[in-house]
Length: 300
Image (cartoon, rainbow, N blue to C red; front, side):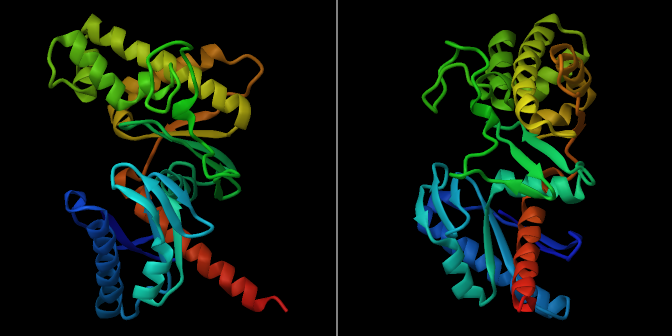
């Protein structure tokens, strides 16, 4: 778990981390979040002169932000956890709940790599691939909370089965996990991962170059589908695979450029906030909540 106290402009005032403790069960994880939030709230009073005025929390899985409920998170064993109500009761301040990728995208769009872009698409390449659609400084959740799920665009029909039930999904080819799996098989080393593959690409290993290009081609296919639908001015690529830097970005930009016809080529940039994006985004959600409350009170 990563937590932060965040100023009105997104400035990081204090941050802290602790294990999620998921091995102790879903109820213990919830209690850990409540305790962590309470400690952070108290830190503001003791060290910054005032407590936090609102709280934001970002969680993985399926999130009902309007109702403030974490509907489902496979890794945490959650189903229908009323996090907003629980945190509001513990902290006695307004609480916003968001999806981890969308909150990370919100931070990248407002104060990170997408600053100043009216339309952006944030794509973290990690164990899976997700996406956040930024429009006018906010992130679109969709009618049912699934907007931006680019990892489950089918880029190779009839290809590798995906846990989602489809075959040939983008994340089965271009996620950090997929590259790790492909490179471990090609190198004959079960411990090899995507970072090792990137290093081997840089050293000129043809096996690594083939694995890497295979992933880039799939990623470019998925991104072109997304930009055809969304027409963003900026594509922000984050997650573990983006840590390869220009080993990823130079061929990826070329692959996207080669695929577009009538579409406008967006700027393709690495994410800027690293693994603090999620908690910074949660802080921005909290500020948005306060701004909305102030506006409501001022409206006659």
